[in-house]
Image (cartoon, rainbow, N blue to C red; front, side, top):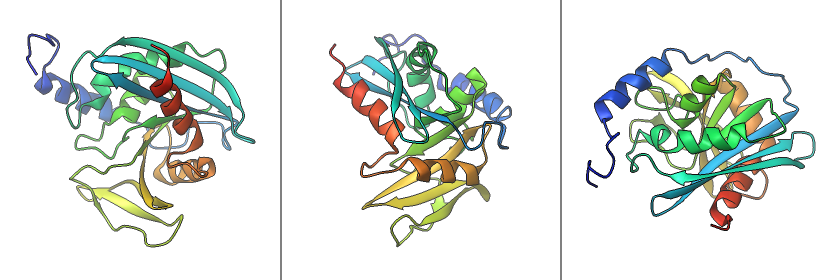
Length: 217
């Protein structure tokens, strides 16, 4: 992928930004608990054109309260560890388009479970100053963890001797759950477990994924 196609591509600068953002992450619970409304956001791409969808749901019955979309070009190609820079612009636009607000946001990516402790969920959470949780289906290579053997069992995930989240067995899949901002690792696990159903991802995030993927371009 040519740097001339992406003039904003500067991975060294992105690493420095991530370290600054990571220093501003709050890992204590600063949200209405139990949450009344839970949101999910995800971005799907066709070539380099992306669609972000943000979904707000009632925590009590998982009823959809609001959906917002944002369309645009990817500012950079995908690089492992830098998903936030690829998806944050569209994610924020879709979040700001919501008419109904929420207590906590689920993001389709990692939170502090990241080489620089600043995955997509932390990136969004710090920039918007909101509580966020990262939920991902795939671990990064740097993670240290033991896979749970039982359904709905969770095991801690570590990076560089720091507890950065949990891996939850859900059906035949594993969810890697980590706090993004303004939430603790334990509360992140508890809230995600409250939202899981027959789908692989927790419901607000699953719907955001489906809506972004199926948007009529």
